[in-house]
Length: 320
Image (cartoon, rainbow, N blue to C red):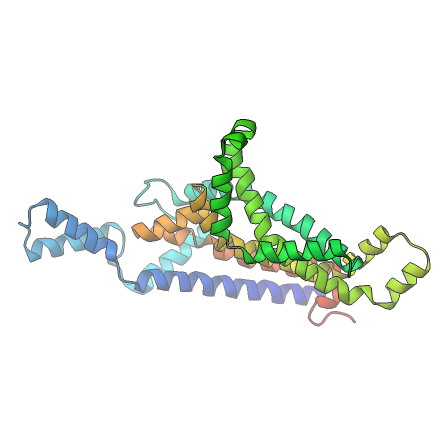
């Protein structure tokens, strides 16, 4: 039964990757190519308007041929899917470097601040959720919840602007400096952690409140087990949905919040790379950044596996 469940999850992940990559290709391939018209218009302007229609049409054809865009749609699609599977993503038109190397380098730059931010959010969010559940009704628990609501409600771009303003203050810059570690690592990680903290706190609180009233918790209290050990038992029973939320948040931030953070702090990460590729109509680079789709599916698959390992009841068709 366990093998059947895992095979079903793998098949579902494969279909999701196929649909996601296909949708990405179709959106890029069928959208109007403004880059070719811009190149033709630039050539016409450079010639002083002396190029006739046939010469402009020849420029369009040469532009499309150089980028492989003159082939039929189905041939381009099959070639694209083959290249994605074999990691042969070609060379960027605008940067002149292999797309695989560019994606790997920019993803590593994003993960430098993203992973610490995720870990901070999980540690403090889970701890805050357990604390507010255990101390429900106290002023300190209410204060922690208010802090979570504020971190969720304040926009990312406003917090980023506030961080940039704070590090330029004379007293702050004199004490901590303005090196890369601050604007490219510490501040982005803290901003990311602030963004994720609220959801981790709220969901941990919601899941643990359902467990804290269970019979086994009352039994543990009756045995005189210390509160810390009881909290760990409660967290273990709520770990599966909390872990699933962590992965979901990680993927959502990877494809959304990184754009705000990397523009605000001028970080050359994966978000900035995909944005520049879309603006420049750099087809190999734009399609190469679609690897985020694969990362998302693999992340969800891993969250399912972890949830099933922690709580076998989450497996479809699992043993009761």
